[in-house]
Length: 115
Length: 111
Image (cartoon, rainbow over all chains, first blue to last red; front, side, top):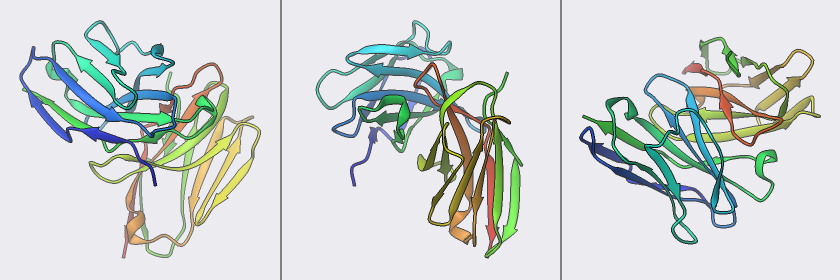
């Protein structure tokens, strides 16, 4: 069964450093998302991406964040200058051509620890 | 305001019993989805119910949706120890494609 994959599973970085989190969505999906979950809190939407551009973003997704689909398979989230409060689990998700009417399939997540 | 509030926050039952979790939301929705998360792991999609549906079944799962009350429930019948996890409802509001998650219900099923 196709699945969303994410790398790395765990990333430790120092405050102020740039990190890139990588995702490979399900191959025939067209809508891509990033969510995050701070430890003990609920999952929060960051950004959605369709047709090579951001379709929606949350207040959390400020100028320090960017997303890219550099090729036909990868979908990346970049944090330019990490802060302590960026420590969280980051989930990538994708869904099919139906967009919002269909299930979003999540990857296993990348645990980001900022020290 | 919060979208997707679950109730109860925590639930502990014996194997074989049924578990019921409730979810309330505030805005009009396109659909509502339930997810499971094992400790420290990813989110597993369980079931999606559209705004024009009232009830849906999938194996031991039964989901209801009452759009007039803006609420949903997830029933897990004949629970197993392997059902121990956190369960989240997530809504897709009518004017957006993003998922808005609730705080979740932590379910413990004792063998």
